[in-house]
Length: 317
Image (tube, rainbow, N blue to C red; front, side, top):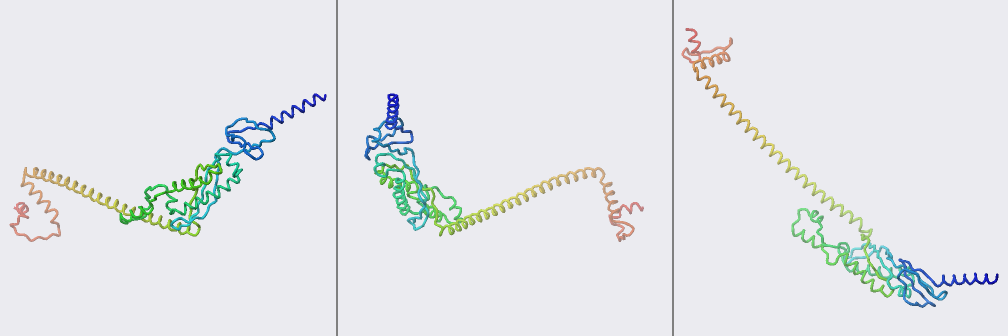
């Protein structure tokens, strides 16, 4: 019975010994093994099962994937003395776990180091460039300024565009921030993968005036569009009236030509008909005149030799 108990205790001790002497590293971790506070061997960066001296050697785990640093927004003056709020963020990782263990030891202290190094680098670069350099990344033509210029001269437009041209730009500024911060973070075993400016905004004291100026510029552009629209509308109406007059003139001309042709044909037909017996035509026309000109109230004083009464004279005879 005692032998069986001793065997069970031995097995438990052996299992505990094996458990204490092994450790597992997964894909997102890297491990530093220490003995009495000193690093032993190379850090384990590949996933798998590893062994150590039980109860003497200790394992410290660090993340191997990308980590996030989000800075606090700060008020920074630019080179042209414009005060802005700048909010930045960064992505970093531990590339040398031994240096990291020996210097900052954990991610909490590492974040404090990042605050102390990245924030001054951001301030240093923002204060070294004008606002337009921190905002723009290319020299793409700003069409809104051309619209807002209205009827200004070509020289004014060129001067306005050159005012907003950049020589460095936002991308190079963030690259410079990353380079400056990386030089100070390398001794800690940290690599800055990327630094970006999340947001740039005016301070509250000037934000309202900037918004009012933007609103005024938009209203000016809108008024310009409305004016151009009214001018275009008047142009279209003028063209419509011109086309209408032209159509009416052509229609009147065509109608007069048709009417003239019809009158000519009628006159020709009348002439052909009356040329058969001119005397009879003269007699009929005279009777029509008598009918329209003479009635019971008409009084005429005419010579007996008048051609107007020649048919009446012949009738009387």
